[in-house]
Length: 158
Image 1 (cartoon, rainbow, N blue to C red):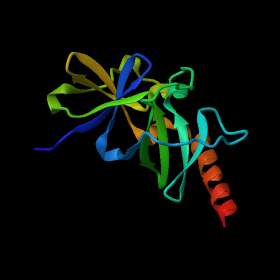
Image 2 (cartoon, helix red, strand yellow):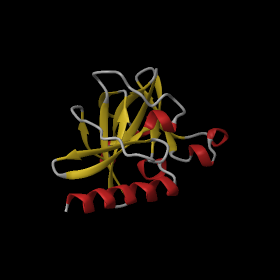
Image 3 (cartoon, rainbow, N blue to C red):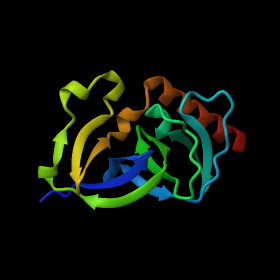
C-alpha cells in the first residue's frame, strides 16, 4: 500500500501541507542574508553547510505580511527543478500519514492560474489542509531570478 506522508505547517491561523517526499529537511536555526532588489517573496539567502540556498516566503505568496516574529518559524528545504529552495513558514505542526480516502483534488471552482500550486485538499483530524505542490509555487520569473541569485553568490564565494 502506498504511503502518503505530509509535513503539516502553519501560515497565520491556517494549516497547509507539503508532500514529505518533496521536503529534504526542516531547519529552525538559520540567519537570512537579505538580497538587494530581490523579486517579491524572496527573503534572501542562507548558507547551509556550505550551500547557498534562497529563501522564499510562503506568507508573501499567500498575500500575508512576510515578517515572522516567532521562535517556531521554520524553513522547509525542498528540491525543485534542480535547485534547493527554503520556504519559510510560521511553524511546522507535524509530519502525518494521510489515508488516500482523506485526499481530494482541489475543487475546480477554487483553481486558477494563481492557485495552481494548490492541488489537493487533505482531511486531517477535524481540519481541512491544503497541500502545496513545490514545483508550482514559484513563477517562472521568480525561479529564473533565484537561479541568478544562486549563481552570483557561488561566483562571489570563489
